Image (cartoon, rainbow, N blue to C red; front, side, top):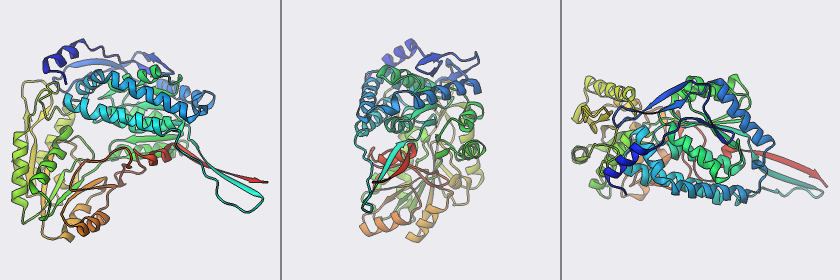
Length: 494
């Protein structure tokens, strides 16, 4: 890992280009642009081409040609896999530049961008590159004189819309399986974090992806996102973001060609600590890490800590100590543990939730205010509330920031009721030494992922996605390919 001064030097020398990447080349667009503001100091670091319907049309047309007449869907799966593996190698070669770009545009600490974000992105493209030729079709046993074939074929043009909190990881979770399946893609990154996605687009061309197979267009959701969601030549739409925007994409599909829409949306994840947890200090440390990692800007963040009343003071005090010791600082400093929130409007929204929590009677144990005043950046103190009740906004609404709500319970049934008392169902945590309890509670929790005696663990072999208003479909694992393929039955009378 480079030193702070070296990251600062490289940041000044970084060339941040903001053109769209369409049909294998950089396209400046029609002239409209928008600024990308770095949350670390409030400075404009680039101006990026702003897509309107015309640019989205051009990107979709390129993807349509590449799918209908180009080589990519017709390549041997092993060859598609080799291109994805070359891309993974290029991401590794450019790892420092990509990590620096991510940190500058969305504010996460450079150590996390390099060690976690880029590792995840590289591993994703490598894993699906290795998987590409391992998939098989089916030939069910049928009556004599007939042959049945069930083939899984690429679904077509995929529109992928991804957020700013993990701009490369989440792009990889959409793009890699879609490409492995033989689809072509139009990727629209968040307007807060377009620069790393544009660099990814250029690297895919360098890796040998044919023109039009991956296109990257920048723009805001109400214009570019809407145009992509309503486009009749987009066959599949994959979105990660807020539940409110997810609803828009379902409407766009209904109003256009009934494209399949796969959604990974918000969360208000419970993290249950029972008195028989293997290590209460470890449970508290993990709870603190989970809510403050990535500035709390994670849909899986364990933002509701549910603690048995007999150990609530012990666990809460330990979390508060961790929060107060956390180093908030310049995201380009490798020693920084929590960076800047993505922008001023988002910081204001998080502060509004904090004010609401205090007004509703929750007790503010630590934090609650801006940090690093005078830096120009959008920093917030790690914040912990206890005496939170389930009806409060703190316990109901996704805050998407470093704000933890502590609730208490007296028995297991109450813990499960509190955990499930949310419109979301993305993830949950449970701390217990009892194997039977672990199984029973995991089954009772309405969430796509349950972590027992850990949090945010896993790898690409396991699927990720939500229940209820946290969405549908799954990213990661072999199951992700179900989103980007269609099943075809062929019955042959012999």
